[in-house]
Image (cartoon, rainbow, N blue to C red):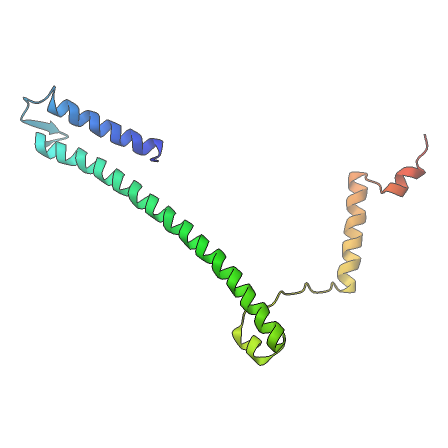
Length: 145
């Protein structure tokens, strides 16, 4: 469905064409911004705007349909690829040359944080709790009052 601006362009141009054919049917030419246009030239200009707007809408719908088709294809490929990968790993082993040459990728395991990273994270958590005045479950139980 065309956007509001496109509908406005189509409606305006259709209204101008209607006025050119009815109310201004007896006027042979028009002087617009220093240039003279015949009624047929004006009709052609406004009709070309209508045609171009409709053409873009058709192209947009075709593009959207192509995108949907591509997404469906990618889903199918992903399913078959994963099944193929698992079949090759189960028959030849995960570290085999065949599986490695397929380059289907493996899930990367997150790197284990270093001791310095863990200490820095603990300090940041402690600072955040202090800044927000938050307490853990056991800390809240200690409060009486």
